[in-house]
Image 1: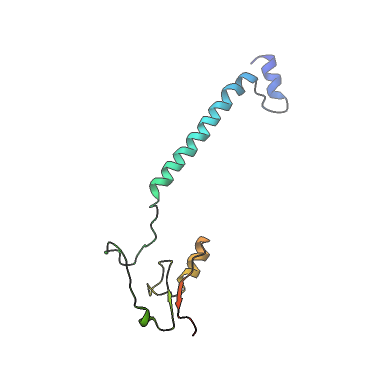
Image 2: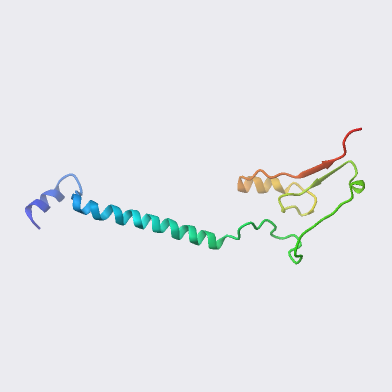
Length: 115
């Protein structure tokens, strides 16, 4: 090791020359950008985008429930989080869902106007 190299290492830490920085900075930027893009790609492949219904009538091509207004009575509360054990009616499962995910979904409430 030369005297100048050994005195640089013996000093207060690692010293990089301008030439080293000119090479190291672009390499670090390309590596960071590449890692970010690979992460986006892998995350996009592992998620099923838009999947909301995880368990209700999965054998049906489309889940549809229809009710006549006359049959509702004075008030009906319907699930919008797809977690209710009484689906399509709300059982309050959205509260646990919101706590676990930070979401703010709640039920659909339909009631008759007061006369």
